[in-house]
Length: 79
Picture 1 (cartoon, rainbow, N blue to C red):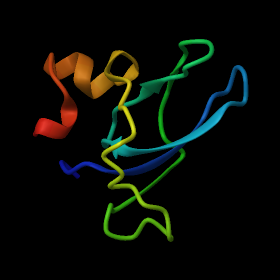
Picture 2: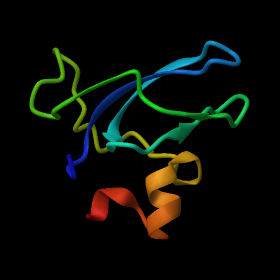
Picture 3: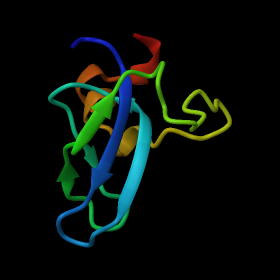
């Protein structure tokens, strides 16, 4: 959909795994280690994070690695 969701990522190059509460449909995030654009292998609504606190505002969102932020030209959470 058009809403932000929770995504799980796995880099095919270095096998780095990460999760993000700033995941969008048909939009990837670059791997922090090797900068390969990675699309989420699993996405779900923010309302059901399986016990994880995805609304942790203290975590910094790496905007330079986020394809959505790059496309928008600003922080994607401001949508």
